[in-house]
Image 1 (cartoon, rainbow, N blue to C red):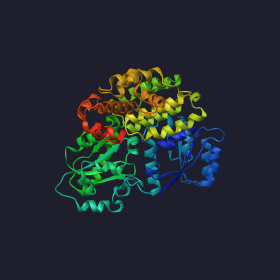
Image 2: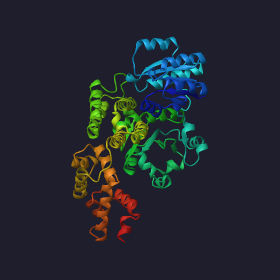
Image 3: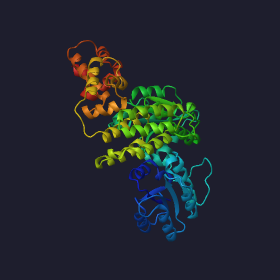
Image 4: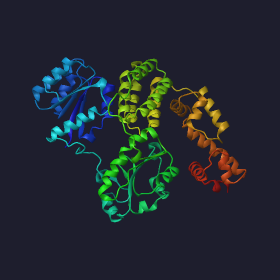
Length: 489
């Protein structure tokens, strides 16, 4: 059962944020239509006959309460929710008189409030109360449904159970790879180098619809270390130890929960369920002072200062154990409501609208900052410039220090910029990321040394700052199509 929903909101950016940040389909809802004012919405309601209407109150022309009154004359049973930035008690009372299902305050909307409302709405349509802790919503991840196993999708679970060793301890592992890296990966070539061939042979590896790799593995302490060493920009989420098939669902849920923890730990970390962070369920995602500071910086329009502020907010949220979903939703709504109109020119509104969706799908805080940096840079700058003095300083620094351990932080420090802002600026002006530039620089230096036959391959790898020979060989072959030995001839 899918519940057809109509969204009415006169502020385009707010409407876009709600469309992009709320997982409507997961809760059994689809957006059948969206309108920017009451008159348009009434015509749409008559035409579409949706099951649910979510509407703002204060809109030009016909306001939300007039719209609700008209809808009630047409359909006394349709479910209506009021979504407004005005905490006006009299308006709320009128909404109750019209039989409104829920009154949601946009200014104080917590990350889970709309989702909780959707859950209760869905159970109202089902005509049955929802048992606490038991999920019956359609589209929620079910093992058989969401698994797209690489070799035999239709028979994966059945075949896997044949190979189960009941005496073994099992862990469900979800392996996430940076989406940009994943899009450039040939999965078949990737699997050829996978360090656990028996996992593939026994069909204990599959890819879900979100392109996350799932491994069901025998309890083994080496797993996270070997996987993290082998693959760059990877996060490993590991469930508690379970006995067998009857506990796989539990293990899967545990591993999935840990994706929130990965947001703060970042790529190249393994997170185990035994060490799961306990998130706060009360209190604001942002303090009043933090909101005021960010709003003031938005008014000034200094993208670098805004990103410095966001860096501080992320660190504070981690310290206070604020759930990433709550934090991202709070930041998205604040930024959407308060970015000055002078920055939202015609060519920028689409960029900002798209950025809302991309920001909300971030896996790590680093991704959040990169995407936010790109959005702010695009909106707050009139046009691209040639290589600036700060980027030029970073280029010189890389040329002088490529043999050392170079990080994004060190390069940004040489440019005296926030790392994420620097990364966006660098890519816009050079066409590649800072670390891609460093990798290319090191390979070019290595090619010179290999041709001159100055030392062994291991020695040359160390001279250009890549001390792990296996990693050096992979980077070199990726850029040249040859191994270092083949290139040397």
